[in-house]
Amino acid sequence: MSLNNGQTLTVSGQDMTKNGSSNRAPWDDARTGLKPSTPTRKPKPPKPENAITIVVSSRVLFNMEKEQQIYKQHGMEEYIKYQVEHETEPFSPGPAFSFIKALEAVNTRLRELYPESEELFDVVLMTNNHAYVGLRLINTINHHQLFIERFCMTGGNSPIGYLKAYHTNLYLSADPVKVREALEEGIAAAIMFTPEKMKEVSETQLRVAFDGDAVLFSDESERIYKAHGLDKFFEHEKTHENKPLDHGPLKGFLEVLGKLQKKFYDKGQRMDCPIRTYLVTARSAASSGARALKTLRSWGLEIDEALFLAGASKGPMLEKIRPHIFFDDQMFHVEGAAEMGTVACHVPYGEAQRVTKKAIKDKEISSAPK
Image 1 (cartoon, rainbow, N blue to C red):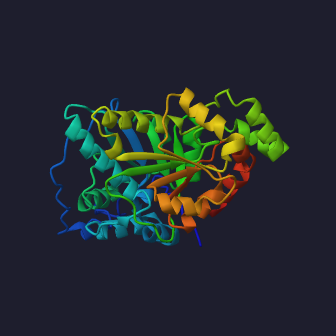
Image 2 (image 1 turned 120 degrees about the vertical axis):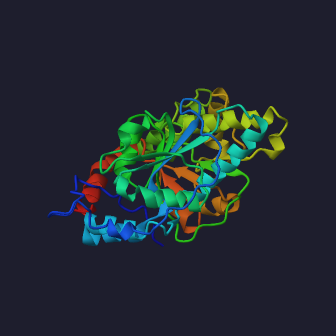
Image 3 (image 1 turned 90 degrees about the vertical axis):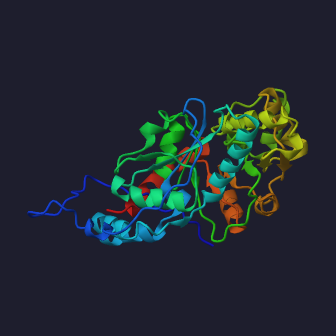
């Protein structure tokens, strides 16, 4: 099977007007007679400082592979012309689509229970597409009845500088370089991949699955394992069983999920909570599981289900869980999950990732559109 996380489009100061006496761009004529879709009535978005902000790139929210190939093969002018000619044709859903729909389902429940609260998910579309492409994105969002009011179209500049301004709690992109930059800025981020065939997932309950080490937790224990082997790892975990692990890059995202879960528990809806979380780890329960659970307890965090697989493949278990999203720092597990239809995200965090970072960057640069 093949995973596809694509190349994010870049723009470098393209001239958007036709040479000669006319000031019209070559794609202006294509827009004549086209009417953007009409949005339906939507609730007011929460203030960014009160919301749980999920930032997604356009290329994980929607399937834009055909357009990407046009850009690679024919350049920016043809790419924009194609987008404008097809701006009333909605993009099909991408790997993040079901996740975003599940966030909206949670928001609906929260608004019913807490009509005045702004403690809701707020989705921001972050893309380095040129604003000229924005109309097709808006039409697509309206077509799919998504509640996304905040856009950031950077026209080729890196979107990383905007993430903190949006109070970002999670950033999802197909671009490894941007995700690494976000992680270096202390922002929870992951590279999202598209399985060849995605499993159906719940429309009423958001399900999020996390790996432990180098995702929820720091990579402290993983460094011991890689440097000294499995026996030393077990010995280290037993010795430090009562010492909480340091936090990893996605601890904060689990925290905000737990905070929202508690709002449902407070209304007597623990058994009908629309958010469910999973720890899916290669650790074994007897030899190293206690430290993971004690760490979560020391943080005051609950996890709904914990699966200790003792090194077994995670794909079959994830197929049973059917999460909307799964986070892991090891590509082996990301690929195994994707092979069985799970939308999996790679978290390139920790010492083991830094070893190959330069090689990965060199590969990305050499394969990027010129």
